[in-house]
Image 1 (cartoon, rainbow, N blue to C red):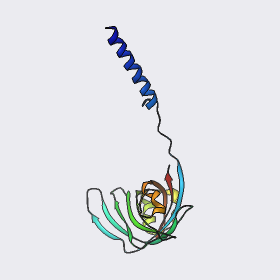
Image 2 (cartoon, one colour):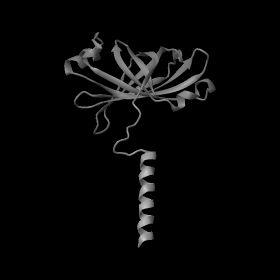
Image 3 (spheres, helix red, strand yellow):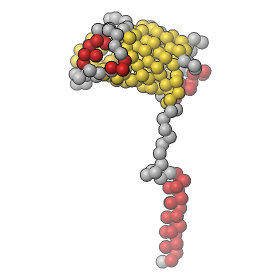
Image 4 (tube, rainbow, N blue to C red):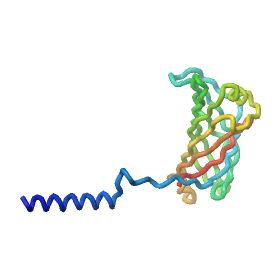
Length: 183
């Protein structure tokens, strides 16, 4: 009986040490998010916007061509090629679910595939003004995106594991957003 008690105490002591060494889930906290500025993206949009209509229970599908633009930051700069689109869905309550896919070409010639996903929404009158191409203060609506990248270029391989976030605004026939890397 004594040896069983001793073994049990040793095991519990070991478990307590392991919990302390590995972190107690009740008291441990994950590291805080930090943002590193990546680049400003200026994305050119053009007509025609293809309205596919109600394609699912979620909403109406719109395809908005991405025809060019630029991106400039400390570690990343170049041009946006004329080959992408926003495969957006607009819900009944006016939420635009952003799903862009396009190709970047850095100033040194590397190709980078970029996909953004996000949301744009606001009061109905503000969304109507945006849709009409009118200038609207970006503080009057919410427009945020996440960014993921793919590239085979060794100099930019770090992007393959990067997650970005961006705060965006619609300016006529362009979307402009400041992107940050999550650290």
